[in-house]
Length: 237
Ligand SMILES: *[C@@H]1O[C@H](CO)[C@@H](O)[C@H](O)[C@H]1NC(C)=O
Image 1 (cartoon, rainbow, N blue to C red):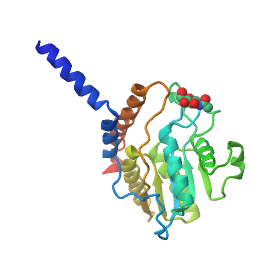
Image 2: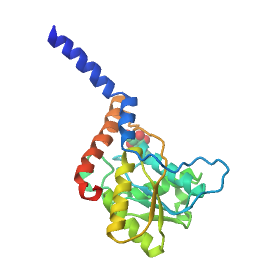
Image 3: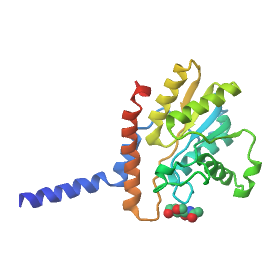
Image 4: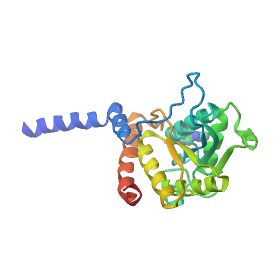
């Protein structure tokens, strides 16, 4: 009897934790409060940033963008169109072979940055084939395989161009760590810059394998982020 009751409570608790509202709540714990919103309300753009940086995220194994990555790109491109940033960097390397079993695979495939660029062109209403005619202020950064590298390589570009203000575009679960790393690395390198974070709406995974898989992936994003906080602790304190 006691065992049965325990089982029922465990099942209830597990399904509560595994529900979308709960996972969304957990992800939002890692977001930044005072983000810059994309909504245009007619007021003139306040402090346009020199550059909007869209941070990369693992691709599907077939090389296409996942839903969370598409949300980052959509928000970044909209912000660029709304005049919140003068330039746009898509930052993300070719998928590494080690993760090729579950995520977009291999050196010969497109980089995350390239896939983001193509999705960004679609957001502008252009076809994939028109990427050759991308806006001049859009830059591909195809070397980064981690958030720390995203920041290092983006700061490199910013230094070359003489840019000093940034708007980071990334999912809520990644915002706090990305912001802290950016501030820390910039100050370590003696680069003075203003860093802000763009509001990106929650976008869960869509794997076409049912909501259990989608929820599991969203929960994994949260848990992986907690692990990354420990792994990156020296950038965060
Ligand atoms: C790639 O895989 C994902 C997940 O299975 C699927 O949703 C998407 O449509 C696929 N894309 C292409 C271009 O086949």
